[in-house]
Length: 174
Image (spheres, rainbow, N blue to C red):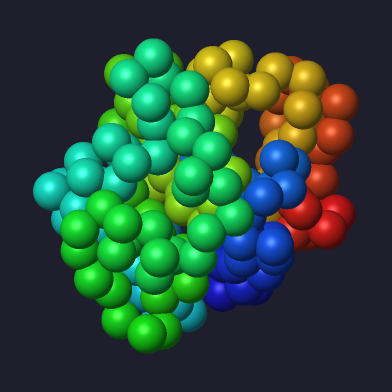
């Protein structure tokens, strides 16, 4: 809950225009169900497949570049422009994504309150995926981990290719 509150605070600050704000959330399978339920209760709106496809078309130009018309828009405005509606309580739009790279739009940088949601089997898979996401969209930039185990934090710190490594902090304000 604490991590999701910090991510919400970060990604909704200035409607997600801070490039250092979170772009994706990677959750281990063992906590995925509880994390999703908690996120939903906090105003994260999990899009279905059709909604996610419609929003991706709005977010990115055919050449893959982020569309300037979406930058800094609220979750409700983005949903409306993409052709679907969300509850008044929706603060962040979330798309479940499978992988990272040019064919996976929610692994790209999104300068608005939109996140990719990845579920992976374990810590090692989380680390590999985080590196893949960063290699695609932001090597050397920012990574935020929410963990209380110092050994886990150290393992990630040694391998994640960023200059700004945050622990238990909202990335936009960290």
